[in-house]
Image (cartoon, rainbow, N blue to C red; front, side):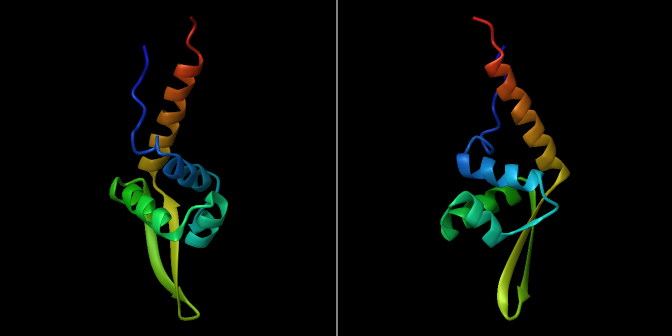
Length: 96
């Protein structure tokens, strides 16, 4: 039986963002942008979607008068990622 894949994480960029945040305490917007190769606009939209779902905490501040956005994965986001990976493993381990 195939489990449904979380549509929020099934987007390549959102999955990349969550994957990055699973391995670090928190990450700055520019670090995530550099790692994913995404445009600022697209990354901003996808981070907002993850935040609205409760998967990320987003903190906006300033460093040397420049805006600084820092992202951190929540417990809900970690659980969603773990469930997504388990569901994918179910697809990969199907015996035909």
